[in-house]
Image (cartoon, one colour):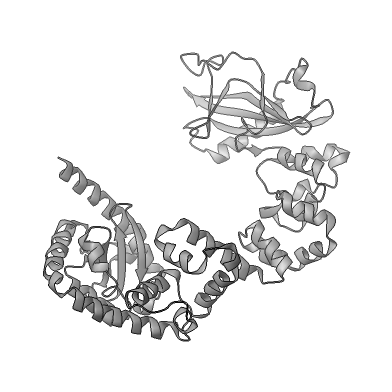
Length: 459
């Protein structure tokens, strides 16, 4: 499939019978019921001694099975051929016309049975290639490690191999998650020490979904990949989550503060804490007027201890300042709790979740009791005000055998219908059974109930 073949007359040969049989078998395996929308498969062939991937669509209509060629992608061309298929820019999907085959009643505007050229990156749906061994017929790709390739499109891989032969090095190392990184490929070509470093760390890189930037930083700066990756993930979360903006303002205003930001995340790791816990601590310190530029306030030696101290001090100061507003807060809190009372799930379920119940907090005092017993700050850091404003709702997971004993505290957003936080004693994460109860039993129930409640309010 030469670069100039698009400009010349070109005929895609019919699908060989043995290929049709392979696709038919694979389709029965992937779609046993033989129903639903059209499916895509592909096979490899040769056009002018170059490997080409032919994409086919299959469909069932009135108890018959139909197959047709819809796209052709070659290694040597920057264009592809497409026939009777439309690319949907919004939904990132594809529509295929079946009028000529008798599998639809009306002709679609984009189908006329002719092949047209298009940009390579479009009209290339994800497919299962039924004859990948066909690449072995081309001597120039004998050492391309195509047999070890685990990616999406073998043609894209061979195109990359044409430009960067060192890609086979990554594939043979099992680094499929970064094999198409041009940054890594260029580094391999000029830095033998980097190649040895990849070999030494291949297991760690392959087992994690590492950012390429984190891999390069770990190599250049001589730091553990896990640590650099954790920093990159936390920084990404810090950039995207507006709720954590105070942390970004404190530790990451400028690029030259990178070391301070790294120290912050390393500090959280060594203290076994989280950005949300530090954010509560920071809010308390700011309210109390403490100087956060001082190391003793910025990075206290025992974070959990000083977190609790500052939260208690904040709570005392806030309670004194807000004493006159508490009556109104209790009233609003109770109204919200009553409004969303139907989201509770107190009836015993079936299976492994029958021992749990979900109840809504009825008053700020219940939040204080919950936080005091479980040693977290749900009753001290303004969660009562958030609930009174309906920004988030606080629920308690209880064991049905001890319904009055604090167990797990859940913060839920009625706007996004998602759990924002879920912690047990001393901010520990719940076990798998509790999380399964929350995610599989209560969340779907709460979402349905909330939809009905919103519809009722709208009427």
